[in-house]
Length: 370
Ligand SMILES: Nc1ncnc2c1ncn2[C@@H]1O[C@H](COP(=O)(O)OP(=O)(O)O)[C@@H](O)[C@H]1O
Ligand SMILES: [Mg+2]
Image 1 (cartoon, rainbow, N blue to C red):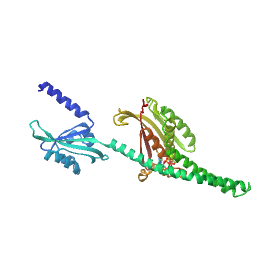
Image 2 (image 1 turned 60 degrees about the vertical axis):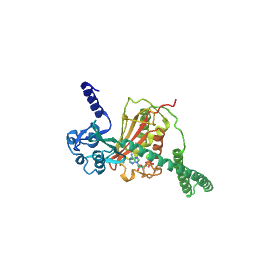
Image 3 (image 1 turned 30 degrees about the vertical axis):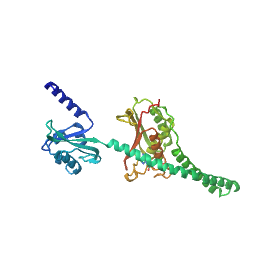
Image 4 (image 1 turned 180 degrees about the vertical axis):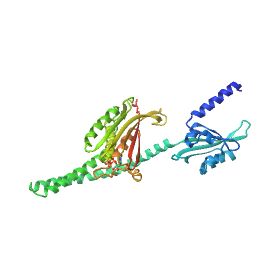
């Protein structure tokens, strides 16, 4: 059995464990009053220890009947219960937090019951990943459809182009009708470009992995975009973390990815504005595959203070051909999504209409397959 010294050491250890884990732990005593709320639970609920301790849990979770029922089951019926899917933790002044919840009775060494404990796990990161996967799946399906369509269009398009050239040759050089054959040919060319872009998107090309210096890639794109957008007054700012080493990726694809994003940012600005590109190492970790070691994530953010995206359009911007621009193809973001997936990363858009947009690309350090 433990000596008293060991017991106090054990208690210190338990306290440290409770303070360090990234699970929220809330315990109630036999009177159903909160007897413990660890720092993670305080962060999730937005309640300080002082606000929570000694209060009845029904008061704490007022209006959140699912949580109350689960705690009741553990406390009054002495049964364990969990829900890993459906609970949103509501808290003051913040978005509801998706959580996984488990409640269990606490038993004393003599077999009696001494209250209950609730364990909360923050699922927001998991949900974000699930969303990203869903979006990528939808894209694969659309891309397959679109590839078939593109193939069908290319041949008749070639016919139209050829016919317009023949027509142009038959007409006298100074005929006013030459203008029309010119339009036919130019527009056919435009459709062709869209289709090429679409086929790029759907062509199964494996990324050619090499060491890519993101700062270099982004720097070059910005020089290029400054030139392309010189009729507007756009201030480009780079905040690149110099400690980020080259990452393993496909230089051409990553260039295309960031070019599309930076171009979109610049295009969102009417006359005068700001585009900021930053890179940083994310403080948390991302598991690429079950069983592999966690790898650090690099986050590249492209922000602009342009027109922003209406919330009802946020769902559509990744759909191939969705565009709000007269000269857009609507394939930019779909391509970005594909490139990010190929690099086992994910992409997130935050936007407020009229204020601006931030696109965050998270890329893991991919290791070479041995
Ligand atoms: N930074 C941004 N600010 C505002 N709207 C954006 C931004 N990026 C993308 N969008 C919206 O998403 C749509 C789709 O973008 P994209 O797939 O790149 O196609 P395109 O640029 O050819 O329109 C755009 O037409 C625009 O409405
Ligand atoms: Mg675009």
